[in-house]
Length: 463
Ligand code: UD1
Ligand code: CA
Image (cartoon, rainbow, N blue to C red):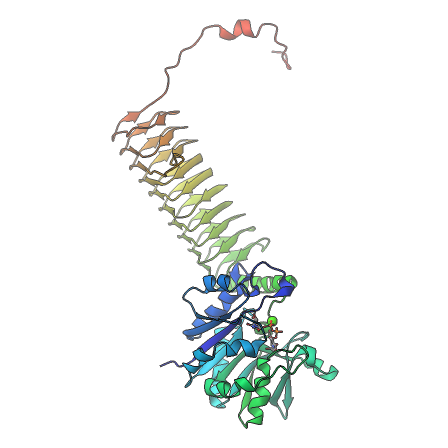
């Protein structure tokens, strides 16, 4: 059985971020930092997780859902105090190790977490601190070594001048032997310049108790990057945006230039797909092979099949099949399914609808709450009237139907197979298969009407 567990510290307010949310919910590449950290634990196979929430705990609880247990730290008195709030969680894992980390350092990866656990186990350590060497260590806890071994961690605010020159820093992530940690937790005292209970004091206490304190020095300084303010947050976005895009390039995705291209970490993109400038791909989006996405497109939590083209369009929580062509200037709203070989042209909005294979909706049309069959043709300016001010109703348009330009389809209504609607009709009754539904006044012409009316008119340009 995997006895290892994790405690993620996420109770801080993050005053310097000046946000109306807890700092750990601030986003890097559209994903809250806490989400990055929880996922890193998950990928490291640490399935028993506990998040310490405090500042605006309800928002943290809401985000965490069932991906971790929650304990509350009502008064923020430091990182050791936060861990103490999870004492009963620790007691349930007394025979294992606990990975303690900060919810505001998103780039800790499973590789580092597992490599550190390896060192921790080999050395039978009470604690293994994950550290990194960084150019500008300001603000971080510094690693104090003696004869190569860690002996203490000193916080910036408590450091002597020569200690401030140390570039090896505490990432804020550690493996602890749970039993050893529980033994010393109550011995940590707030005897420092911030009057806080520092988890980092555990190192000294273990050494005093003749226990082993180890270090896993990561070669990747990014793992320690955290965000305390907006500048840090921008830097995290900037740094990881490029890392991620380069990874996609290595996997065969094509980028002509990176202007305005932002891709979230959980997005997947197939080979030979071309991403054009101004493209934002968010959430759990999956793009197939051989697509062209952009310019200026936003796709969120959606699936796009192979060989599809999405041009200057926004797509939310929808599914788009193979060889679909959408855009420019379309809006595909949640819960839409666009089957293969569909063409959706400019200024078309689709919402909560299924569009059957081979259907064309070429211009200026709204399709909402509708079930549309195969090979349907929408003329220009068709509107499904799905909302009567109180309730939403559905339209059903069967295979092969031809909807004339400027048709209003007042739901609920069914247009049968291969049926037609006359241009300009407001259709309120079902149209049977193969029929023409037409609803408009007969045309009459008033002869010579304008001759008298326009007598004496001055034209800008001579006839
Ligand atoms: C901490 C470490 C420092 C390390 C740095 C890495 C301590 C004393 N210092 O400093 O050595 O280099 O992280 O980023 O541990 N939190 C709580 N409850 C509290 C206080 C903090 O849950 O009472 C949470 C915060 O939400 C945050 C994390 O713990 O996610 C770290 O707290 P923060 O105040 O940012 O610590 P640092 O000063 O950065
Ligand atoms: Ca921090």
